Amino acid sequence: MSKKGKGNFLMQGAILGVASIVVRLIGIIYRVPLNNILGEKGVAYYGVAFDVYSILLLLSSYSLPLAVSKMVSKRVTLKQYKNTRRIFIFALAFAFVCGVAAFCITFFGADFFARLLNYPQSAVALKVLSPALIILSIMGVMRGYFQGLGTMIPTAVSNIVEQIINAIISIVAASALYKSVTDAQIAKYSFNNVREAYGAAGGTLGTVCGALAALIFLIVLYCLYRKILKKQIKNDETDYEEPVGSILKVLILTIIPVILSTTIYNISGLLDAGLFSNIMEAKGMNHDTIDVLTGMFTGNYRLLVNVPIALASALASSLIPSIVKSMTEGNRGVVINKIESSIKVTMMVAFPCAVGIGVLSRQIMGFLFPTSTDPDKVSLMFIVGCISIVLYSLSTITNSILQGIDKMRIPVIHSAIALVAHVIILVGMLYLFKIDIFCVVICDALFALIVCILNARSLNKYLGYRQEIKKSIIMPAICSIIMGIFAYFISYFIYKGIKSYAVSVLITMIAAAIIYGVLLMLLRVIDADELAMFPGGGKIYRIAKKLHFMK
Image (cartoon, rainbow, N blue to C red):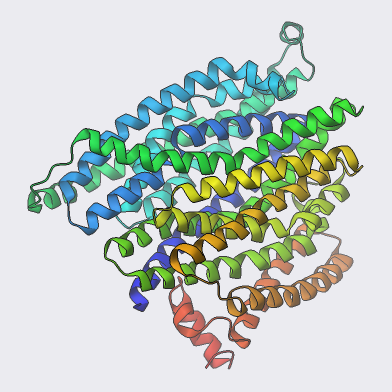
């Protein structure tokens, strides 16, 4: 496999990965004031509303970028530009219908879903969120179209635009709605904490506005691209025009397995909230305490661990069209090389993030969430659950690989098996052990572990692929542990000297990143060719060579 071919999807993945990390960081930054406005009860209502919304988003549009990118990538490889345009047009129509259906279910079923999960306060936020389902359905097709053309830049920039608008509107609207609640409005509702419910609804308004801004950006970009598209269509000598029925059939056959696998894959969070709330209430726990614990899990723990997982999702998005292209060309060896590279890169990022979050957990809580009711408990969640960063990153990338080689049903089956095991173990632990929310943290990691094991078996079965262990897993883990030891002592002495969580965390993160990078080079985990494939890699290599870190 050429360095150019191998590097292209890694470069595209890196672009989208950097954007995803920026988006997650913006998300953390704005969630700090948002959490302070809502309090942990409001954060719980906000989180539960998003869990329900996320499932409906998965059902309506989450799979569209993947499906459209696969179809477009294949036809672009074959230079069938007329059919590429037809796919885009009919996918938009399909997305609009799905989005409207999801909107109706969400808006009119909000009270039912909220009561079912034992969080009636979440209904207000869920109704506010519902229009985003139409917007994101259309946007999913546009992002998938650009990804199929081989560029992740439109998706990356639109993600950042979306999150910036989201951050601004969420904070302003949450504060305004929280303060606007009157005694007369409180009397209208049968549940408590109405102010927190309205604040959570204000927080979700930012999601709708951010999605709309990103969609407008993509529409403008598409209008600018149309000149190139018209030229390609004019030069297209393809006689075969794909019928509407054929396009819709391929769309549906691609979408349904992805919908099932991603829904099962993500529904575990929704089930966790519902099971935890109902079982702990049956055991006699006060519902306000349940709300606070759920808020800690969704608003602190899950928010932070999802940041590094975003890179795996980004790399997966760039990997799928790349694998489809190689499969279309019949280059099985290239597919294997891409799989090896993507998993290695994913693990090289996931391990240090997991170790770093575990080691710096208490200081991160002091820095990002100073108003938390019980920062020590959340810190312990990070220590117990940080391994889930590695497991979810690996399961995400391997799910996408299986989808890319047209084994669409396999991730569905694996996720279903993992979900059943997850629910059984979680229910048992909640009833048998007195560790409340930590049962959810542990079972969350077990779910991803089961998917990883099953995916590894399938990759071996269908591609004869056996994961290289030493440089992809063992060495990044060793480098991360050594980095973690240095990070612990650096953060300890800095904080002891200046008593500032913010300064301690930021300096330690920079130092830890440098230490980890040096270790990767000294221990030959990454070579010059691999380093050159990343943005700025050539410059880093020249510096490393002068310092004798690399040959």
